[in-house]
Image 1 (cartoon, rainbow, N blue to C red):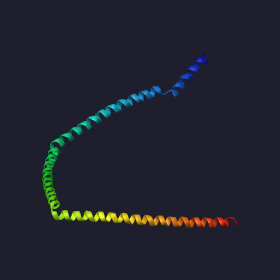
Image 2 (image 1 turned 180 degrees about the vertical axis):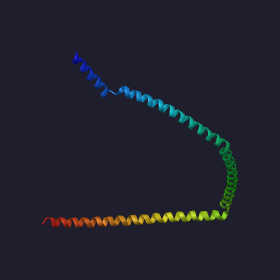
Image 3 (image 1 turned 120 degrees about the vertical axis):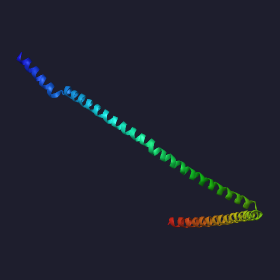
Amino acid sequence: MTMEKIVKDVGDIQSRLIDHRPIIQGEIRYFVKEFEEKRGFRECRLLENLNKMVAETNEQALPNCSEAMHQNLLQALTRLEAANHMAQRIQQRELEAQQSTQMQVCLERRKADWEEFLKQQAILKEEVDEEHAKAVGRLSAQYGEMKKDLAKFATF
């Protein structure tokens, strides 16, 4: 019997030393309870502060911003109308300039000059291509002769 009692006492001591679950669970419950209470108060204060900020914004900042926006939009609208009018005048001038006969004559002369320039460039390109082909042929022949000479020396 004393052996059973000793084993039971050793088991109790071991469970207290090793198994801390009941104590930890109590601490966890206490921590969660405190956390939820403090957090609840903090969230209420936060919501109240947000409500005050929204009310102040609606009462003060919103009217000021809308008034400033209205004034700036009117200024922007007048500037856009002026820019549109200027653009229309520029378009009208360009249209009148294109319709003038003198401009048409100059335009036709420039087109003819451009076509002539393109023809000259094509001729020059052909000449350069021919010269290049001749040079490639000469170099190929020269290297061929050099290869033959080298083959003669290689037999010695």
